[in-house]
Image (tube, rainbow, N blue to C red; front, side, top):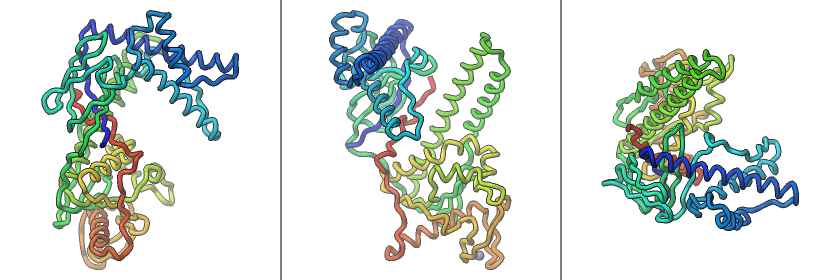
Length: 421
Ligand SMILES: [Zn+2]
């Protein structure tokens, strides 16, 4: 059994929006009251309240104050649980020292992220449309709300979160699926991270394929920068500043959505086409460090940082590799990380193996030994492909480090829902 999250956008009517707002306020008040109670218990009695303590209190609170019965009881328990998790994280940070402890804070209504429900049918019911495209959410005390989005596969509905962001309501469903339906391809490729393009693939039939930078993402990034500059010019506390801030947050959201959609589509397409993908062994830490580099040893991605790729590569490599990995595991595609430090793909000739240092600005590979020519990224991708193929062909040699989806790389929170209204 595998758990997945799917996000749908909700389209509540005016009356439903009001009802949702009331629920949100009631959960926010509960959260803050429970936080205050914990602080109080500690100050007066040096007692650390537990989640169970607060659940008991909730029962009497519901009996005494009718305003707290607006919300569903098990949903309120979930809010208490969230506070409990915030405290546990705080205690962990205190124990670990070094880190800043960050005591759990009171939350304003604006900063309050939403509320959740536990068992399907207890205060809520989601009815997906055909093929899990769109659907309807019935919510206790609110009514039936239209939902738009698309799940990649069906499953048993377990729990949900109602998320309130920038005045919009999203439904994040957790479902459980028996099998993962994903078909891997049959070709093999080496993948090199782009400098001018997003990625360059060397194919096992000798060809090359370039994954271009997504124009939509670049355009969204440009608009965001423009809006940020406009915001910086606005006078503090003014009405127009408030409007400008809203515009910035809207563009942020759009950029994030488009970036995520691009990464999902690209990783899915790669896995559908290939039975084996060989790429650089790079951790996120590595990536950030190498992006900066220094004068003597400039990082591999200096140009990428400066150029169009910046907005995508800034946050994406970790996310993209995680997507590629878990999708590869689902499809049975081999995902092989090449030891780049040892192999030096960008400095090795894929035809004869000669190693020669190439400055970053040199975008072509022309081997003085054997005369082989290729693009720089294409040559690097081919070196990685060759290495991975050799590993697969002779298992007696140093084993290829085949990465499997670890528990902490869970599928991303959203399944590229169609956010368009
Ligand atoms: Zn050569």
